[in-house]
Image 1 (cartoon, one colour):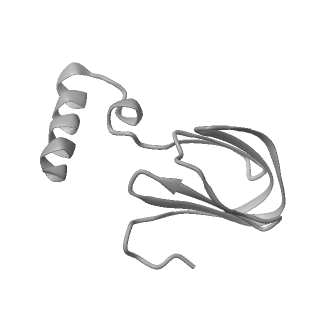
Image 2: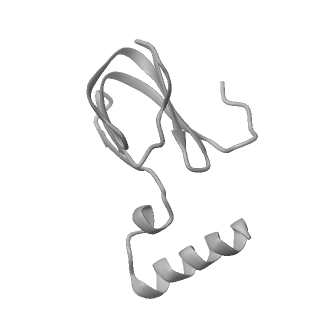
Length: 98
């Protein structure tokens, strides 16, 4: 059933020319240089340190690695992070992260 729902959303997105991040519950990541990242449509913070930010996504996690991290703004589904960003990874459900 979950697969059918996902296929239907994908089809509607393509046919109706709707934004995929809204219809398919995908994160939107905006990166400026390697020092500023804005992430929308996450499902919560799993872990935050000065070197790592791990966010829950609909289907997995988003891992941001670097140093000197500071959360400049945080809302229920949006976060603005500043610091030196070295790596960004999407981790699918069921696979090991770091």
